[in-house]
Length: 255
Image (cartoon, rainbow, N blue to C red; front, side, top):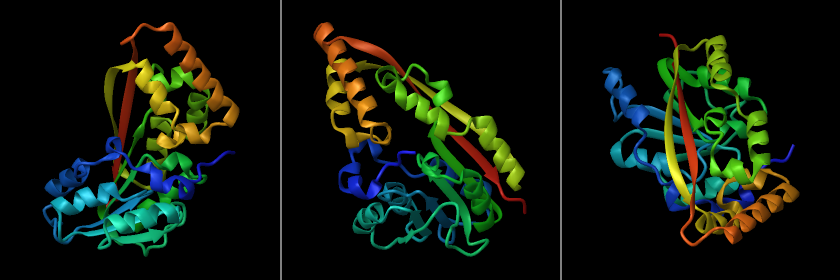
């Protein structure tokens, strides 16, 4: 199984498309939990990458306790340089290095498919949450975006996603089986049109997305050739339709 070396690409990973606003699910949790305030909330972001989400949270919640965990020491070095006041911890999501009940809120954004033991990860999140705490997973939903431009030119990426992602039903079921309550899934769909030339420029920089890094060299080169052929056959300014779907799955630890 090919895995992305995030230590290798950590310095090149950040770009404006990965900027973050404050976590809306976190603010909603605080609104629904009067006993937990923005000054005393303890937040863990598992798979925190270069720390952009926690930095955005810090701007809105300057007194909160914010902790980022990631397996990649390279990503954590970038996060620590960006925001030295947070706690950045190297650790496996399936064996979190924290005591039970340490956090009010745990997030995981765009990283769980890289974990080998996903059900263990879900159980670990439940363990480190306090009673009444909340877990929110955010990622793409491969089964709801078959028209994504990346899948069109790099079909190997879709096959890898079908292998590495859990369906929404499976993820929700795993959370319920672990002991979460009030488990729900919400999708956000977006339709776009992509400029072929611009997309070729983007795809030619392989570090731009883990999808390109995770596939074999042969599959990546084949996708670039498909794009080059499409660009050669297109007229200036031609665009093609694309679609994208985010899924947010939420659940609470029983009180």
